[in-house]
Length: 347
Image 1 (spheres, rainbow, N blue to C red):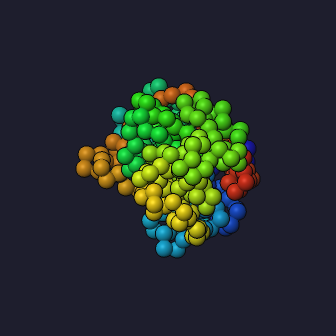
Image 2: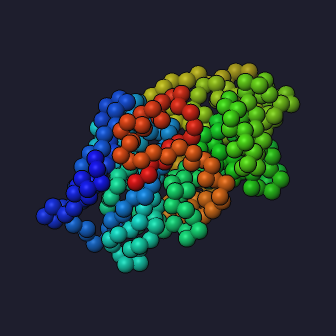
Image 3: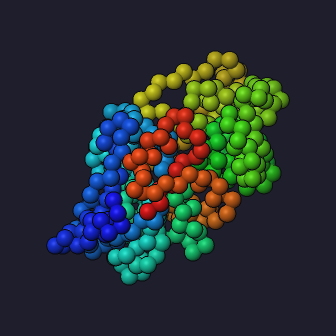
């Protein structure tokens, strides 16, 4: 679609404007569909998107139609349209400029939990202003940073701990980045993709590859073993086995991966009982129990945005596609064997 044609679709037609949203319509198929915008109601904002982040793990399952039936209501994004499995307009990492709504927000760059769409409306309370020193593109990492922050709270990790992260995806790298900022913490990231070593080291962590024979049982002395806390983010059976094998005596393994309707084998034999390991889940849908009485969702997302004020984190945004190209390119970028980290959509 040409730029004049795109402008025509956004032009007022009577009292209704028409934007475009990204829909997952059947396994492996993405479409851009018109999205009518009614007159702006009081208490809402209209936002013109600049970027939106793709959550590779979750949106890969959405694209494949693998959201389990019993999880479909709980997995709904805040402003999702449609229903699982298809068709569904999904996403929750949008960044843009407020062009209508309360005057204190108009002209501000904001983060909003909205699906991929070029212009959209949302409750003003969901538009979280981005700090002035935070580039809008990097702000698309806010939801992932929020997940990483919540996981650290859930884990009980602290200064001087030996911490291992299995899986160097976006969430794993952000967990490692936060953990490495704790005084005296020794953080190792384990991933089979050796090309991620420079990125891991730039974030202040050690890198280890399970394929290099560096990871053994917790009683061994390999890199990343005998850990006080282990975070698993690889969404793979082998990764979970590595995570359990990396924990030290009475260590904690925090599972952040979501497997959809896939069943996996969990190796709870071997040293799991003799080492008295603890396997817990961390999920961003609830504020960590230890913070919940004082922290609400707004405070947590604002903290996540401020934690992104580090230029090194731009390296996590290595793949960018134009919104118009998303139907053709996004399925390939969400393939299980796709290289790189999660893509960013540019509007």
